[in-house]
Length: 267
Image (cartoon, rainbow, N blue to C red; front, top):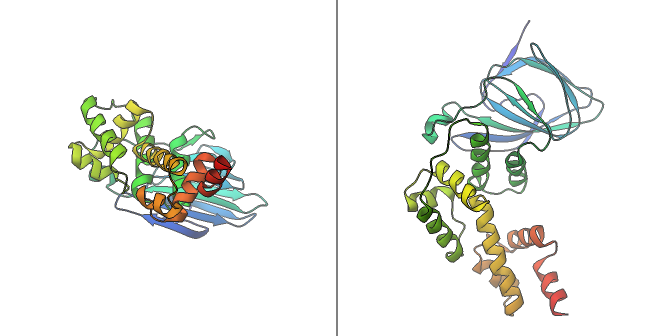
């Protein structure tokens, strides 16, 4: 059996959006209806989430029907072929670059076999997808990847002192004029960013990115109710990149734009 090997960042189909850092590469690939991919494998481990369409995947000893929302983990050099149905399909890929685990300096292990997960099994992976589509920063995205890694890894997360978590909360609650990265916060409390990310969620119920956005939007809500400040002024005070980012984030949480919210409440 001939198997085509695909190197880092290579996929069959048509590639569109892609971003990457030293650890991961995220990308979208699109496939035509009735397209068939012969047996192939990849140099790197990766996750694939089907966002549109359907296909059948044949591995060495498996046959799987893949529907929208299914999450597939494929280890490096896993040989498989795909047959797409009579509709166009799109996949979102999270690729783990060679040596990624050495760069994070934490012992985290990926699965060693192909796994197909049920739809909705790992909310953190769908958050990676949404943040990618919203063109958010890699720092916001990376935290959700770490969350997934910890959720499948068997080792126990170290226990952090509550004072360190409280210091991070204090920074996020009071320094609103910027978006704090996971790495910058980790430097300030002298703890590894991956451990901080996991411990923060265990203590607060939120990722650092989610907590930070909640604080910013809550303060913005108060400003809309209590002041006559313009949308731009409130957006700037909250550290948003621009008005469009603020409006989109506010509407995502409250269901309406900040302008419409103020108008309706004050009418």
